[in-house]
Length: 350
Ligand SMILES: [Zn+2]
Image 1 (cartoon, rainbow, N blue to C red):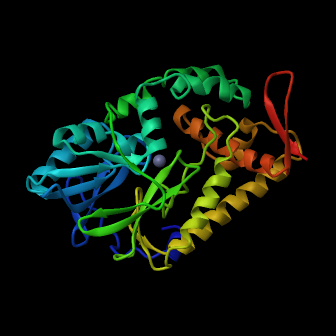
Image 2: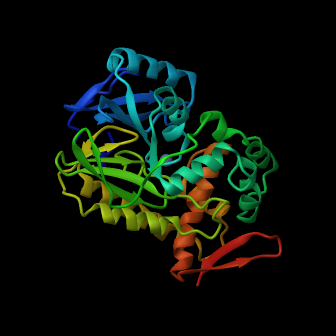
């Protein structure tokens, strides 16, 4: 456990549910964990007892990546954990593949509506169709403009065309819309939708006042910082500002809220964690400002922020994240941006 994590409380200690097994959080709310084929090797999903159209069953928040390992774990959950009870609704906090991968599979199997925000629904549909602009190759001119000229790395990125569809075989064709402030009744309890930005287009966290529980999705994670990236589809975006504003918004919730994150373990210490994340980004931002005494591209900034060897997948996130820091400072007028004769954007202290 790192020193920052030691400032948080983990009410379940080291208990982690095995794949396919339900761990009760409170009666009617269970934690399941699904494998992921990345360095980040798991995602947490949340099952909530629910009723709909006079049927009783469970609703699930997020669905796991579309891999055989996750499907096998789901079969075990459905047969042993839920003992054949149906899924009634398939919620998604956001469009990333580990969150919506099996949404189509589950939704179709149970004729269960898919429930998410409009922007997450639209992005999931666009990315599952690998539309130009949101597929792997679209990142290439974007990253070239930000200094990536290594041919081998560019070639690896070009080959990632099917990355999203390979993990998200289908997304439901229709959905029920969530909007910020909506109160959704799940199993007789009200869950408030709190949208957040900067990690994905319109991320939905769910807060139940009666239980004082926040299903935070990827907006607040106990151990790792949430990825905040400038992507090719929104090349002038300022996602870090949006993200920081969004987590400040979550400090309106009580300090003793139990947080159920998508990665890591349930924890207490929401405000502490938000302060840690704000400090983390503030430290990164000052390192970036210091580096930009000289003109710097996003590629020049990556080794400052990530002091390890990165593969193409990690580098695309790292570059996006470096750019998110540069853009926040650029929008604040602390840095200015020029596009040089080589086509590369460089940022320098204004
Ligand atoms: Zn995510």
